[in-house]
Image 1 (cartoon, rainbow, N blue to C red):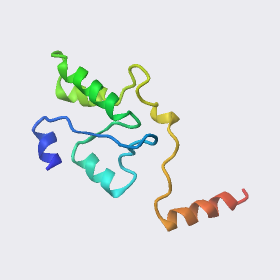
Image 2 (cartoon, rainbow, N blue to C red):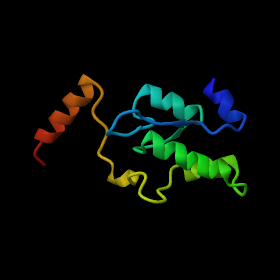
Image 3 (cartoon, rainbow, N blue to C red):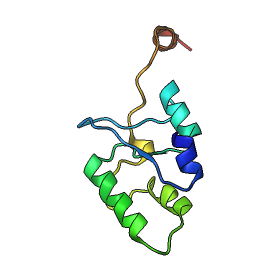
Length: 108
């Protein structure tokens, strides 16, 4: 179980295999479960960038696993887009789409 692994000190990182897009933790039910299990998001890093960054951070003897988890979310050399610059997540449900459409047509 991922929660058991993270509780034991293993750094678990969720990444995407897609060429574009990002891992948006907490937006969907699966991401909420991953967050609850202590999994770190690789955001929009490629698999290669995620693997290289994780290997670099784990190879440093001066960092704790908690620090490694924190640093996985920091952009060092342009390997990830700052969270504030990522596009908003897509609307997941018909309800969300209807509310967004209603709010866009509202005149204030």
